[in-house]
Image (cartoon, rainbow, N blue to C red; front, top):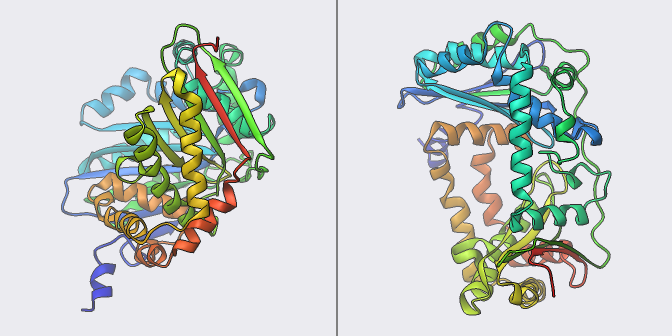
Length: 431
């Protein structure tokens, strides 16, 4: 057997993943792992994300998803909880900007129960008014708490300054203190009725399973689900880069630390230069002790409690940002030191050692991500979600290895301009 053949049989690939499409459009993928006694179900659907809610109903998508486990037409909240607890299983649903994610874990013998509960909560929730009220009050409490969190307020101010007011990334999916108190059980029920359905739905099952039986099991519980009202996938609009320096400030009296978030619009996951930008970001502020930014801002100059960079990727133009927590007296200096690292990368090639180390890190951690059923399920779901192909893991090392120093520098030059970025600071009021 060749080395390539050995690799193909040790990774989730098109040869080892069983894929089926149900008549109503649901994609089912099964990957057997007989070395475990458990099974993981992970999935998502295109509808139900915050991108579909009206601005005055901001937070409705998240509230709707959180309420699904609070009762169905066949099980109330306590019955749902007991059914899972009695067999040591779990299941949950959450919503983001673009869609809904769901997943759970159980012993392999309890997969039928897990699929039954999954179908029940996705298809037949009842949105009990008392639970909607509780979830709404919990969200309001969290939002009030965030008003005293300099890190969260800096992030919020940054996104509001980077994205136009009519862009879904401008808003927080959690909602605001103006919108959440007005959300009702009827709104959640209507949102569910319109946006949840089989279109764009993917279910991944990994564990001690018979792959051929998985599609039959899901077909039995979800195969007759239809929703003509469910909208088609709607991509978010692109966003222009800042044309200068945009500054935002969110003062919080009584704080002894300031946090800043500085950045630009980055590439989507499907962008041709995403992997080059990902390597550039790792060198800039992730690898080792938070990359060059961590080394220079935090370690050498002692300017920050934390300092790093982050590249969001995803379905739309997510942010490429630098974030740090600093003494209020050091904010301007820490920002300048961070910018200096960005400019240095744009002006000079990444050195061979940095590039080699980061490449080795990316390819070396892949097997670690596949050590658990959860890791395998999440990887398969990502390959489907971003149209990477089921053989992506076979090609990924070659994709990473082919990236040159010039590719990395070109990526950071394309997105980061020396005097065009957004910077948001939250901390004690400036005297």
